[in-house]
Amino acid sequence: MTKIAIFGVGLIGGSLALCFKGKPGITVVGHSNSQSSVDKYLKRNVVDHATTSMEEAAQDADFIFVCVPVGNIEDYLRRLSELPLKPGCIITDVGSTKASIAEFASKLQFKDAFFIGGHPMAGKEKSGVEAATSLLYENAFYVLTPEQSTPVEVYDRLAGLLLHTRAQLVKVDPRLHDDVVGAISHLPHIIAVALVNQIARYNGDNALYSNLAAGGFRDITRIASSDPVVWRDILIDNRDVVLKLLEDWNLEIASFIELLKQGDGAGIAEQFRMANDFRSALPERRKGVLTSVYEIYVDIPDHPGIIGQIATLLGNHRVNLSNIQIIESREDVPGVLRLSFRDEYQMDKAAELLNKENYAVHA
Image (cartoon, rainbow, N blue to C red):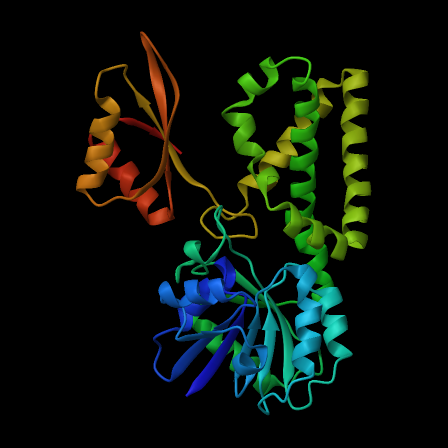
């Protein structure tokens, strides 16, 4: 029997647990310092066993997943290094920064155990074990950052276990990981927060800013609503990389300022063209480090009961809606209905059904 211990059974840890639980020869043990959380894990049937004892969870574990916030990972690794772990035990984490964690782990004495850094690049708008799903990692990148001294057999064992997630495994140097993820995730979060705060200051003098910001502005800045404590720890941990990225960002903004000062229309258009070309070449249907949104927009006439008809149509075909919003509906002007779904399959199925009923559907 292979024992997997998961410290921190929230969205990420809980989704891993669901990927492993019930597989032949595997038992999953969850750990939390809170008895109420332990009771929740068991009530939701996410793990086979749960405990508040770190020693009990780690005892005889073949794999240990540390799924706590970035700011707490090093403390958990230190405490694990002081326990009598099973020879050959593989310890991994799910933090979104890797270099500092890898450096810290390399200085610990794990005796006969091994550490391999990890970062499953998937998430959801919701957090907690309540949002956990075995489908979270399917078709997502799962980064592993082994040190050069890590035995091939050890890496292969962890990679083999992670096949249950149906993610695409990628082996990356931990420092390169932080450079890339800093650019495609950490920097965008800072920009979104700064932009929202800028508009909030303007809104203090004129509420029209917030009234008109609903819709497109809210969509492009949604990551500004991310957990403040989680992002505090991530940015502080990766601050050297982020500071360099912000310096580069300032140069990009400075070039736009200069183009505007000079009234250089051709230069402005060229910036948009280059961005358009690069963005168009990005994969559309692959999960990434930024959470994907599965939404469609439907043009609807201002008829009584039209929203109920659409909801009934989708419900009769077992399509699950996660949210529904009327963006605009005025007399003699078609309204726009925004429909949100939990996954790509539900979104595609809804679009197909609505197209068959001659609704105008937009991605």
